[in-house]
Image 1: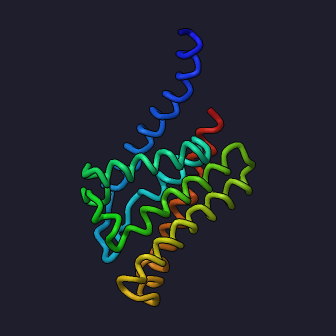
Image 2 (image 1 turned 30 degrees about the vertical axis):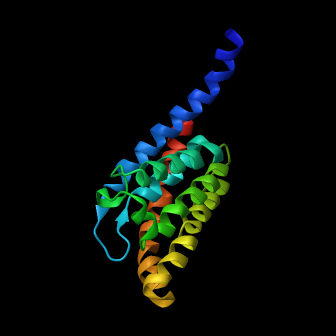
Length: 173
């Protein structure tokens, strides 16, 4: 019996951390500037931190838990959106891109400053690939690049720098 409990603890801890991470991501989705077709939120900052602090697997798992909660009808997406329709709407590609970004951001963990900065920036930019690709089906490629990427470049740089600063500060503790 003791062996079963000992081997179950890491799995329970991992699941608990993924669930807590998904709630952080849900909270960050509610800090939103209403823009069309894609709102500006703090989600990408949370995604970077989930991966960078937890590692690739934990970051990915937290985003998958978040997406599952939203698909099941919990109002966790931006502006309280929920259900499968949110994944099929204009922002669906970004939601899926969060999982990729969290996974990639996980490789920043334990690295030096320059490598962390590069990995976090690459992870942040990676989430735009499925996001813009999916959005282009709704508004065309030129408009998707403009409204779904270029408009977000300043915020992307600020949130990436903030994620890096938070990661460095937390690593010192």
